Image (cartoon, rainbow, N blue to C red):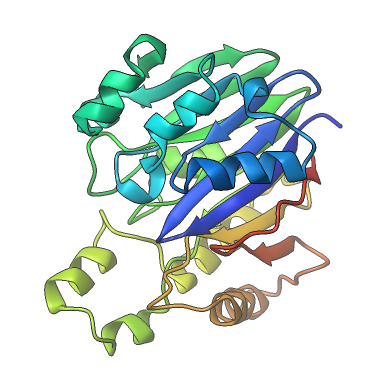
Length: 270
């Protein structure tokens, strides 16, 4: 195994992902309780003391809920975040991790953590310096792209050659438009600093599969689904339809699954 990936939770109510090599163990976001994170690690046969670093994408609560609590479980782990994200943490959380907090630029920062190369790049979201990450080792690459209202050229370039891609499919546009959310909230979600829709995720995947030098069959996880404006079945169906309209097929051109808020921890090897 070069890299391993597991989703502990993925939704608009909480997010946490685990990435490992043979010697390095990382988390991306801690938006669920520390006890759930510890339980998920134990399910995979791991301990929180093995976590070398926690990478934070932005300061919204569904991504940083247990910063303080998880720090107590893994006091040696570093917390990596953009300056904007660090400044946006609640004072209690910021104080708790002050000695273990490293701030980076979201603009193309490369950082070696153990034997994994981590690359940061900026997202388009209504947060202070939201940041996404890719993780590489021995020619294998994992990219996590959620909480962005659009796929910029920089985002696309970072994820286009990933072996495993976690891609936001937050909402079905018609469900959102005719749902109960107030109009300003709908407008925010649909904006360029909101969230990717199912259809936008599908179009993004079509673009990736059309890359002229593509030689990989990527594994894609649709992520960060809204509980109010989406379902796993709807996300899968809409994305599949967009793919098939472009003559791309799940199981042939890519492998695709949908992540949810109550994930059973399963390690996917890359």
